[in-house]
Image (cartoon, rainbow, N blue to C red; front, side, top):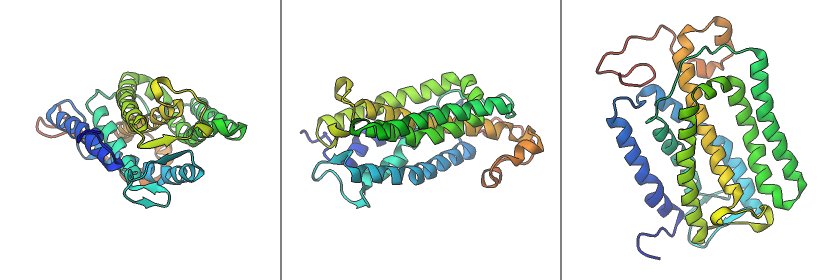
Length: 282
């Protein structure tokens, strides 16, 4: 390979992940209408913590099972079965996706109050994804990876959709672009790594569908994780914007740790030089 071709997991980050991250961050910082400030970045920190805590056991289990593995010399160090580069990806992917999303217009209007039927519909839809994944897990070796992705993703989708799927539809342009562009880019990065032997996805645990050489399971994984990130941030910004106006019974339904970080008074009027509560400079 040429000198600019990454041959390690860390080099993949240096070549493919960090440069666009910094470029998108600079663009967001320079644009007056980008979402920027304390509140948006608190949302990113929450997503980062959840990503590491929720993904690490799942990732460790699949690596130990042999669903994928790394070529010699690609990983520098591991914690359990998970390499350092993978942990960095748990952090870099949400930051990259969030910065891209924050360049878009993210709607925050609409009441937080939803009917019980509406919330149950979202909960059921996410539960159905998880149930499908559980079924695929036990169906046979070839569906193990696909089933693991769906079973792992179902609970998160259920929580997000139960909390506010109607708002995600209202914000569908930001949600679609926020998910679609980073997903397509990460597909290309993953295709490069697999094509050049940096890591290998086990044929025994995949269904064998691989458009352009990228296993369908990998495509669904990056789509699923970006759905988590974008939906989580869009719902968080909506929650922050509407929180000062909601009734006491709605406030009581929010976990205390999250409620403590939300505004307790009416939102101040932003000046021309200061961002508003949501972080968007007028």
